[in-house]
Length: 146
Image 1: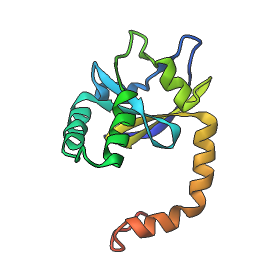
Image 2: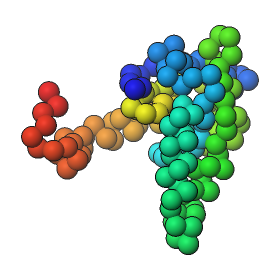
Image 3: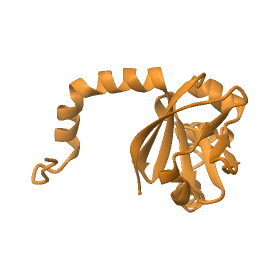
């Protein structure tokens, strides 16, 4: 399981340090793709393969299924960390996520997300106001989060 928040700078060649806590869970080779909210999703191969099976089950006759499948898979690439624990993020993915210098890498259960620092801070500020309402609508009322 991936959890936590880490901040690292992306270098001029497009390399970003993958937090040591996430490297073992991602394995030697993993997948990076366009995510929702203009961040990048990073999946271990086992989770990527599970997702691929779910996508295969979608009806290709539905326009929304085709559209999202294209979006998700066309941006995907296999990646691995170098000896310094850095991953090279392709230019098209850096552009999509707005990654220029400061990045935030977060663990989100079965995946890792990579955010532009400014976008992450904006997202958190916007979401914080409605967090209690979102939690109330999604979480069983018998479950206590505190």
